[in-house]
Image 1 (cartoon, rainbow, N blue to C red):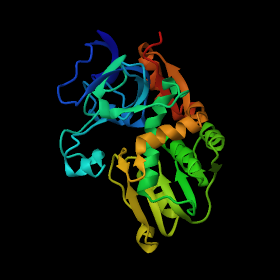
Image 2: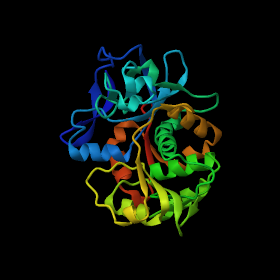
Image 3: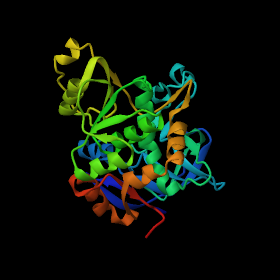
Image 4: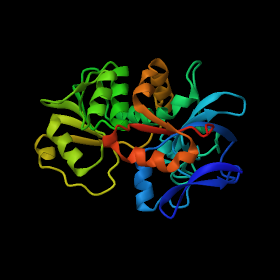
Length: 319
């Protein structure tokens, strides 16, 4: 048996869980010892909506493979044979697709079995204890790619939670300046530590909505210049009305979801490279660490953005 965090009766709960044995669908299954697993805002939505009931949470995690290789884990399983997979769009796999921590048990546990294709080896010197933030960085890499970010773009980000900060980090890694709308003082400080500027003005070529709400989408439309592009990186969990300015300015909305591969390479590998080149990203984003048995305190902390939390991380090996 091992320790894991499972949603029971609408609450994340520490449980004794069976050792992972795989479900028989993963190709080349690998047992990963989890070093770090982060709480994502999506986890809170999954709990509230009931989607996560009975599930072990966690789609942001990193650890060690059986041969001792430190790895980040891209929490997706795909068939590799459908047209979407062959094109590199495995986030749209029409075959045996799963998302660990969402549709299958995830990484808030001591161990997890995942396909070998999910493993992204970490470069020397990059500690898996900070590599759970590779997942939100990969979301940002994918969002930047989807919106066709270029060094000539004037860029703004609406929202300075983990995804907004990941977007700042990725933009700066690409040599692009970025202005950010941030709500809380600790978020403003984090933006500046990552090389972004706090505050927005004027019309932008690219605006990233890192929140995913009706108000953040309205703010993004207002900030976009004529023929601008809005990268919708924050997930919309409810329908949202859109301001007429979207049509008047001929603004393009470009949604993005998860991560995949393009001619430039795999989004997750690029994210690991960004983190390896600037480990300070993890120093900025990870504000709290807890053992698995502090589940109540950890989720309460993650839910209270105003109290200074950015990224809350479980360390399954700690007590």
